[in-house]
Image (cartoon, rainbow, N blue to C red; front, side, top):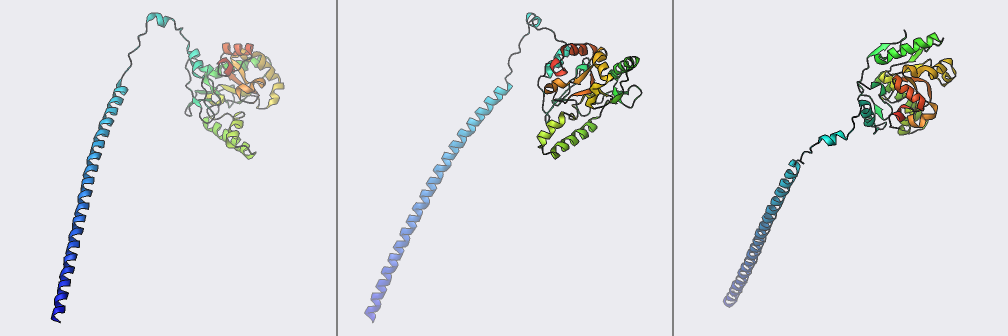
Length: 298
């Protein structure tokens, strides 16, 4: 029994020695792993610092280059007297005509500024519109409830009086219309065509041939008058014949003729007469042009 106990004690000591050795080995392995991870972290950190410094330096350089490029001002060109003399002086009318060479669209029109001197040549249509807050100086004409811009009204009064002497009465039917009224009328016409199965975009285009978009109508300017009625049968009346023969002498033109619908984009309106000035009206009558052609934007 005593010998057995000694043997067991010896085995226990060997077992403890082996366990102690295994623990020491594990400790050494863990220590090595920790040391290796630490070395890797230091290396990665140093590498990241180097890359960051390089990137910061590069960004700073690009920023300085960009700033230098932005602040660089090209040398001012000198205009000599001989160069200036080669450029012909243009009238304000020519400048205005040139400025309308880029029409907008129904959804994105060009908003125009009316010239004080050549106001009578102002072009409005689906691509060119007056601002929504434009307010003409309006007066009533010929004892009617219709109004025109004051600058146009005096010419309409003269034409009306001349026609009366010839036994013709150019009864005002529709003169100035507000932006808001034009908008309501146009939107109703869009809804009408949408109800017939057209898409909204198609309806807008078709509506604009009959009721101009707000700000696009010469009625919004106060420069045009619908005379007697707004029906095509007007072309068969004595009043229409008189206008064809004499309206240009007072500065008025039939704005939307039958054979120019592809240019005006508006239906034939024999009743719609627009003031453009006597000289221009006579030129248009002689040439057969419409205002878009005359201004070079057809």
